[in-house]
Image (cartoon, rainbow, N blue to C red; front, side, top):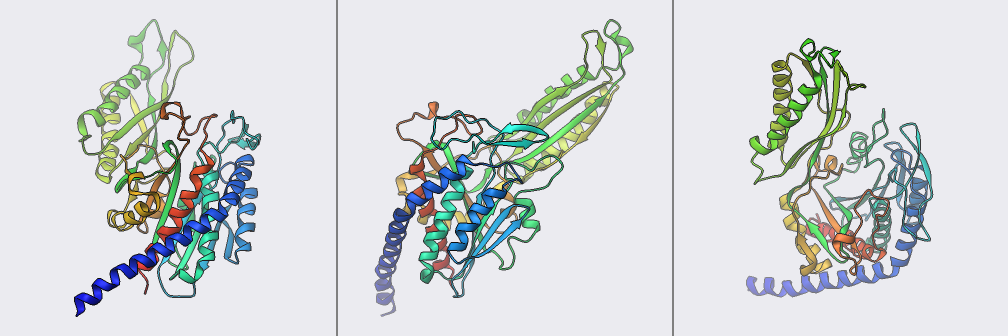
Length: 432
């Protein structure tokens, strides 16, 4: 008898999920025009990290029309809104980033950016060259749909609009790290967090995911090598920091190529800047190297830290020089780590929403995302949403952080649906 009852419940549950998905689709269709309009406005008027004052006001003004509990000024310019269903259940957080980049837009759009801003003391053009405008618009859309479906919720939804994902200006703190420090995951305490990032290289209509380490930890560093200055014609009188730097750069590459098991996880050690000397015939007394480390698991990260210190000191000693390693230099992000159990639990939701054929298991990337700070505290799932027009070959799609960066408005409706269905399904599965 018990077996018959359980069997009868399965189709009823499936019908309930089907009906709920249909309602999400209907509401997402109705709100799509507004989502596009929001995206165009936000794209046309971008602001740099920790300077998203008008952006925050625009977002908060709309959220208040939904009768949400809205807080502004979080981590300087962040906006947080809470939707309380009035019923017991988990607290689900959804996050979008808000900042633009110091990049001149070269797209021929009616809503292209001509904004200017100040970056490290310089007047610069500003552009949403990484799609954060779409992230905000999609989260505003999800807030609208979820508010309309409040009677279907169990628990609370916390909408997080985060500043400074691209990094705070020199001398400032910002982004997810500061939001966490200021308690964005508390009061009410968040149980799980979901996020999407638009991709100019993936077709619209697709969602890509990866369990475990999906985006790399980022650790900038600086090495200052001190030698002894001499005339270039008499190098034996010097302790040459330039040849020391050359030896050091080559040796640092062997951390990845000879010390890490790269068949398991990729890692990167890159020197991006070298400064030393000012004349062809003078060996300088100092050289500075600046670079970045990217790792996809904690063991690799710890190994690179140890190996950097070992090699920098060993090579400097062998050349008669001294060296100072600053690691991390000014900021660092942890690994963007998708909780494997949460990923497995929510994968059916993504497949139902995007279609199984459009839900793609992707390889990790060595780019970084400060969504990782939330994932250090609570289980999180961060995925890529396709934004490339279907008629554009991937090799012709402009890269992120470039003046030609472009993603199609048509990809955003799926993002609204994914964020909404993740919230509803997680609440249904974890209702008290």
